[in-house]
Length: 470
Image (cartoon, rainbow, N blue to C red; front, side):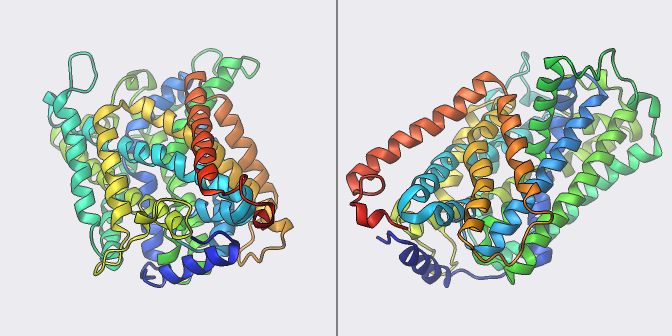
């Protein structure tokens, strides 16, 4: 089992020779964008408006874009310096030391990933089934909850995605382009409808006290709106999880991240303003089929059914892209002994980490059949913020102090990293006490599990003093 920086890098490099660097800029950007879009913006619009009680909730979209761009700079700088499968796992390990705190933090990343990655993908599957209610009303229950058919549909779609991903990466890259066309075509239709039927009065229909900055409720509402918005933006980092399969990563990774964030930010803003201009924000409350309702109002019931089918494809594509990236994380962790060795196995002919894919996929299917959408979104955000985003942004400063070579350096360094840390912590504080407890609970339990494991294996902090040096 490799236990030092040299051994870890050699193990990673040797195994990654079996991976195929088959994803160029077009494929990487397409994977990011379909990951970012998915079902998110189609299903969270009513939730975001409800958080702030009016069109001022668009501030959440803007703040989310600022956070995504700042954090994207962090991912770009780290991803080009360490373009390996695993993303954050590798970044934390190398920044804080494979034999010391990096051992703990990288383990905690994998630990929280076990919970939040399936939750993230389950949210897409639940959203898929929720939108399917527009076409199949029998999927909805009288109390607005999830009935048995709704849960079975979510699980079945998840199983089908696992089946599709069980193939070579070059084939997957080609599929991503076709799915990107469907996703962008659907959004273009929605934007066209909003622009050609724009009503400024609805956009400016702010309720009394909408911008009362002295009230804590405003900031809590803004935090809630931003939580749902950043959930919709996330996916720009997906290319870093696939670092071992990216062609020319120094060029491709930052461009794919920045292009996808700027494009999606502009698309989201125009799309949401257009929807609000046609449907007054009061009428969006509780409407889980807002885009279908929007298109139906403009073009009739048949058009509503067609756009619903397209949205279902977008949701499917998002989960497909997420599962592709997340399945590589346990695989990368297992390469250097930070996770169970069985996850480092590659399929003998397809050259994909099939054990990791099947495990992550199976947990996702179970979660998609058990939980509700709103709790899934806030829960997964609370679980991932402190390790994946805050600790990772801090890693940039640690690696800079170590004089690490960065092929790409974030613009206006270090302001984006500072902004990322500040905004993520603010989001965590305002996300809600129950979800804060969930996030801290998962983190604390992970520390306990790590300590027990480290004691048995005599790893940091129980290793002999000489072996703890980085």
